[in-house]
Image (tube, rainbow, N blue to C red; front, side, top):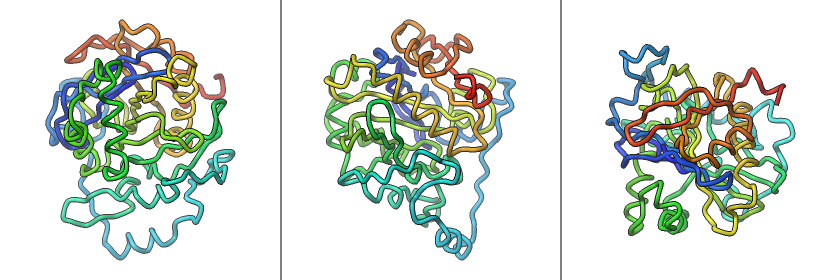
Length: 303
């Protein structure tokens, strides 16, 4: 994976990913991209990890409709005290309604994301030291041009390798958006302005799980800071902290948030350390030697 820009595999084979973060403000973190979609249902059986396989379960439509109808009106998950700021981002007001993932068989359901990543679109905004921040799931028709422009920035392209026409970026996003919900691409919106790109993914269902002792529900984070003006001023650490907290607050089964920046990228590793991650190991990924960074739920009270 790259520093803090990351690629994530959501049921398709993306291009080789890098995980270098480019300072504590631009993080490139992405999956290896070394496996086909059908290999993403768990880690390598020879890797000795205790990773759970994904089961292809389908709820009856009547039950789905019933549960969806009982959802909260504020789009917030229980227990997210201090995160519901009531802020509405222009163009992103109904982000929670747009997290419907494609389910094999042709049915779209708002619960699809809940199965694997607990409906990121409903996590809501959170106040950070830099302003009000929210993860908003990507919509191709609204966000492709912006994300493609970021991918064509030389500092980003060096890690993501997605420079070129918009179709290149679209081919990276589509497998995630049309996949089973194990990877969700998001815009990071700060005080009403989209300024970063994130991929929140199930690390235990990703090829990364072959390279470390993954645990069920381990959740990975990939990030890039889009605008040049937002880099080099300390945003990376604060946003990494906020997103890790969001994951732990809204994903009760998740005990660890993980990342895998390039070991040579000292600023990126430093940003993760400052955000409460610990250096766990060096791991050899297909495209680099990475620093496995882990933030533990059990240590939150000590941070």
